[in-house]
Image (tube, rainbow, N blue to C red):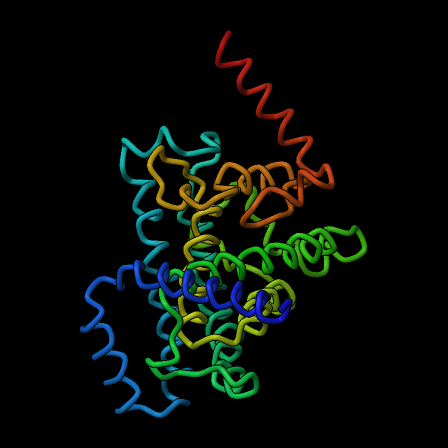
Length: 291
């Protein structure tokens, strides 16, 4: 009787899940997206899709997201949203950043991204359309990837600030105390590897689909360029993300050097009290506005 009762409960739960799943609307233009995805798989090998697709996505998205923030310095109405008003962008710093960034992309980032195919093969990550999770599950998995990556980022980033390690690796990234979007991936090669390793944790856990790897890559690029942009306009789509740290949070880390070690969220800094200086800074800024 108990077994039968448990079976009835599980059966009802399964029916409820199926019913809720049937209410989920399809992704916009699903037929076109499916056709394009299948066309890609039919005309290119898995190696070409994973390798070239990941490299193109990274390069196109990164620089496309950097461009609006680059042009912001020339737009008068955006100047009031510049966080560190006393430290405007300079051509010298931006040119220096671009040169090192290109070297980093060609000799560090792209070679690492070229391992995407071997990563998907090692963990049995599917490519076919039929295996792709429904979009709400991809959204939840992507957010979970961000949570896991942020945990890795907090502790490794904080470790890189240790006085015996900092000047050898992380000092490169802190060369600019007033960050700008393009500077998001301006870092020592070892830092790129160490902090970037957190990106792989979520895909290794879920092993759901190549689409998750690409969606998560898209989100991570949007997030890292946003928090390094140096601008905090009132309308920002990234702010709809629950517990999102935002540009002000990370900009303070570059300005102050200590505290605010997380990248995407705020809870680890709250838990370990490494946001105390930031809270004091916010209180002083609020008092100055009221005076």
